[in-house]
Length: 258
Ligand code: BJW
Ligand code: ZN
Image (cartoon, rainbow, N blue to C red):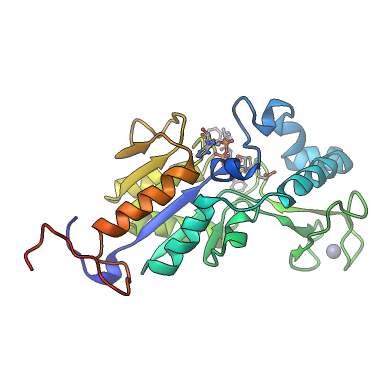
């Protein structure tokens, strides 16, 4: 690896539903995905919510119950460990399940919101956390003004949170390595992040048991489930790339003269 000053080295990680698959959270697409039984336009759009908030909330309530029983897996835990040991790591997730936080990742860029937050449809107050499962009333109401509450997630046709998106673009532009884990890379704008990283010279590694539109373009594809592949990748990365990572005990790189 080319030698750069410490502060210039950075690692970005983009995660999708596949990272939580081994925790028991269903993915969206594919043979066992959530969209197999439900049409996204019937449930994950502002139009669907306006038409039938009760139906949309019943689906989210069901998913909150399902996700609430899941625990982070080895891939989530590895990312939390990476945060502890990296000088500069940006973890960007499309997931709304909260499993990265449960694993201990604290610096998280959430592009699509969070299943455990609600927000007022009139915007009378900032979003609030509500972990009740099941929710006591469906549809839930805003405690401030009594208007309908909605899940604080991003539906199709809605803009992503501006600050999160800017943090993600910025990390993609400056990272040296980007890991793309468990995403079908079909949903924009997150699917463009690895391409932007590549344009800016980053090495992009995809971890996914199945091919995606990115697979042909990235530098390396690890065709394995994340919970096995990521801890192994991280062990190897730690061994081979010391500069830029704040190890207590720097690794010795055999190719360098003593
Ligand atoms: C494993 C594994 C294991 C399995 N280990 N891996 C035409 C062209 C381009 C764009 C558009 C277009 N028409 C419309 C658009 C824009 C649209 C879009 O991208 N649509 C495409 C689908 C066509 N995007 C939007 O609308 C976005 N907003 C936007 O563009 O705003 C513009 C705007 C600006 C200003 C004003 C107004 C608007 C918003 C997108 C919101 C997406 N929301 C959802 C739902 C979130 C809430 C909820 O959960 O209910 O986000 S949809 C769903 O997809 C969810 C996910 O975050 C997202 C991505 O899915 P992900 O994570 O990739 O999951 P899967 O299931 O697709 O893939 C799982 C992968 O894991 C697979 O590859 C497996 O192989 C793998 N896997 N096991 C590792 N063990
Ligand atoms: Zn309100």
